[in-house]
Every structure is written in C-alpha cells, then in structure tokens.
Image 1 (cartoon, rainbow, N blue to C red):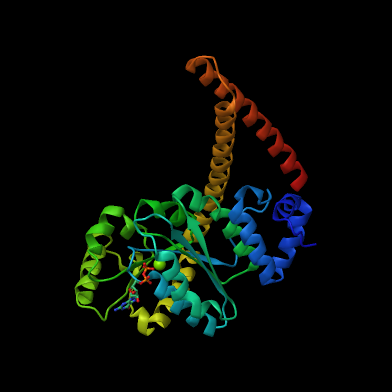
Image 2: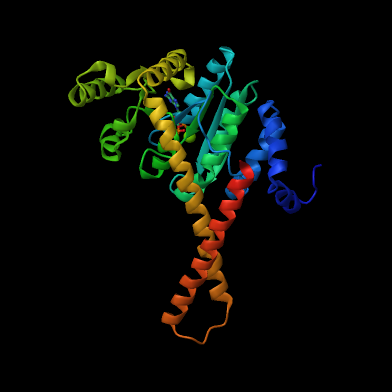
Length: 336
Ligand SMILES: Nc1nc2c(ncn2[C@@H]2O[C@H](COP(=O)(O)OP(=O)(O)O)[C@@H](O)[C@H]2O)c(=O)[nH]1
Ligand SMILES: [Mg+2]
C-alpha cells in the first residue's frame, strides 16, 4: 500500500476512498496515519477531501499568541506534561517563522518541546510559515485532521503577536495570550489589539523584575474597558522554565471551555470557523489557478501588446474558474 514514489502516493490520495481509509485509521488513533495525513496536507492543502470541514467537536482549539521571546514554546512544552498527567491528549502545531526577523526560532521551539513530544497522548508538529498566507493555507485542513484524531486540546502557537497571527486566532475556539515583563508588551499589545482578543492571559517570567507591575497594568486595563469581572480574561502567573503555575493554566483552560460553552460563544466561533475554512480553501485554489495562468502566459512567446495579453489572462482565468465550479458541483454530489 505504501507507494515508494511520493508523487504517485499523492495522486492516490486524491482518491476519496483512500482518504476515507486513512481517516478511519486516524479516527482509530493511529499516529502513523496521523503523521502521514499531516504531511500530505502540509505539502498540498487542496487534497483534503470536500465534506470533511472542521466542524468542531470534542477538541478545544486554543491559539497561543504573544511577542517572540515571551515564553510560548517553553510554556506549551510544560503544559503538555500537565495535560498528559491528567490523562488527556494534546497536540501543538507551531508555526515556524522562516523570515530572517525571527529566524532560528524553529530549532529552539523543537528543542523546548522535545521532552514533552515523547509523552504518550502528545503530538507536536511544526509548519513552516513562509508568509502568513502559505503558512496558514493548510491550517483549516490540519485542524480538521487533528479533530478527527480526537485530541482533548489542540494548541496553535503563532509566530508573533501582530497582524500575521490573525488568521490563526480566527480559527481557534479560544485565544491564550502570553506576555512577559521586559518586552515592552503592554504598549505593543495594545497596538496589535491582542488584549481584546484574549480569553486567557498568562503572565510568564514572573521570576523577572517588572512582573507585578505588568499584572497590575493588565488588571487596570481590563477594569477600565470591561468593568464586569465575569467578562474579563483570567490572568495566570507562571515561570514556565521552572514549571511553576502550569496547573493553574490548565485549570483556567478547562474553566474557560465550560464558560464559552455555557454562554454560547463557542458555538458562534465554530460556525465562524466553517466560513474561514471555506475562504481559505477558495483563496488557495484561486491563487494557484492565477499562478498557473500567469505562468502559461509567461512561457508563451508573445508578440501581442500588453493590453491584449491582459485580456487573454482574464479570459483564461475565467475559463479555469468555471471548470472549478463544475468540479465542485460533482464533488459535492459524490460526497453526499
Ligand atoms: N526567566 C525566565 N525565562 C523564561 C521563562 N520562560 C521562558 N523563558 C526563556 O525565554 C526564552 C524564550 O522562550 P520561548 O519559549 O522560545 O519563547 P517564544 O518565542 O514565545 O516561544 C527562552 O530562553 C526561555 O528559556 C520564565 O518563566 N522565566
Ligand atoms: Mg516559540
């Protein structure tokens, strides 16, 4: 069954039946099937079969955001251990920046989570995020896959706290913001709007000077914008490197899930996730078609003027899009 040539294997996987078979193994908690499916989606998110949208079910999907260096990876590594002790399963997908600005984080993150990655019930993967779009194009399908496996927690570690994190945040059930003293966080986060999105705030590195002040600033900020304490995010203090406060984080996440379920917000966010999934899929397919059409034009030796070439591009693109719609129709018909 295992094809030696990965390209023919990918071709096989485009067959819906093959996916059914592979996903049945994932549902039976076969980790090698999970790893294989993950790699296939990462290479080409478009091969994820129609009809397997991330509906949201058992798994609690938490986006973990915050400035680089705040301690997100260290914290997650330690948190995985706590969750595992509770006999619950969890997965971390880290979006590794390959940009020079934050380069080098990839290896560091792997090392920080290595210890926990060998625990039973824990699955850690990193996805290369060349830019916000390519890095997250695969995310909806990856989420659906991890949900199929049935993890209790799925953590999505973002690259930074800024704009590039937004697609990740909009796909999650909840947002956990990690801040630390000494990073000029409060100003940065206010600008990025990350405070408004956070459901849970972890003040990490409380062994460092300035931690109390940071907690005070955050509390004051939330008292100001939301005087009702039941609406403000819980603030938990940790020293991730010493594994201090990690039980409190896990406990806060458990409580958060119950709260979001009870007040109906979880259901709202999950329906929004379906829309995001659709958008990501359409965007990725359209961009690919555009690239193909442009490439074909580029390679065709052209003697005609730019204006005419532009019109040809639109015409070709329209044709390709129309056939995509027909393909979708028959796929939907097949799936149901
Ligand atoms: N003093 C102190 N250092 C920490 C703590 N947590 C993480 N660090 C260190 O902060 C650095 C950045 O951590 P990392 O987890 O890579 O941050 P990320 O970029 O947010 O993923 C590493 O050198 C960690 O060892 C903590 O609680 N206290
Ligand atoms: Mg990290």
